[in-house]
Length: 158
Image (tube, rainbow, N blue to C red; front, side, top):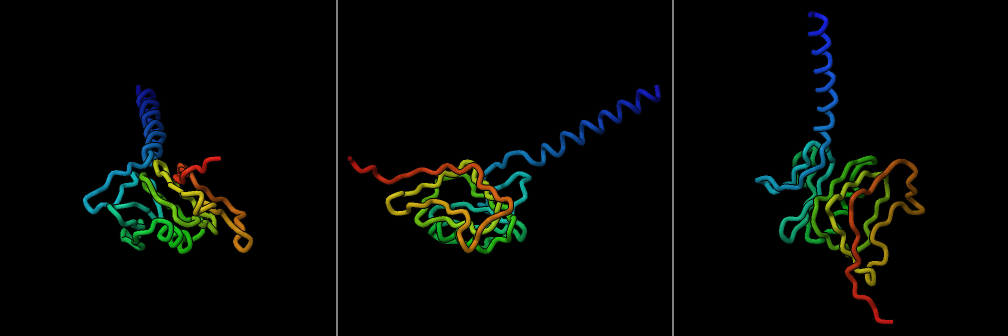
């Protein structure tokens, strides 16, 4: 009887240890809280990018404060990319974002943009996202996951 109880307790402990890590890394919900900062539901990030009306914000998630804000998404995100440390995790909240200049990722970053649509007019911005360049080659791990890139420019008739 004592052996069965120990076996049951051990199985219960193992089941809890398997389920808890999965719960901590569930997909992020992008619902806004009272202070209009999106929640990330357990995904730890260095920066969270979101739009509120006509302004864009970059919240430093570690400091829990807005570090960048502006009316131009491309300028804001490039500021975040350049000031973030190598290997930083950046979350772009779901929504539609107008890309007016090339987004430059010149160091290894982990960018999650599930539910985000980057709207680019290819006739005015020919390169939507640039990852590395001659002066800034990226040799270590980086990622850009989940974003949908949409050309909103008008097609020219042939």
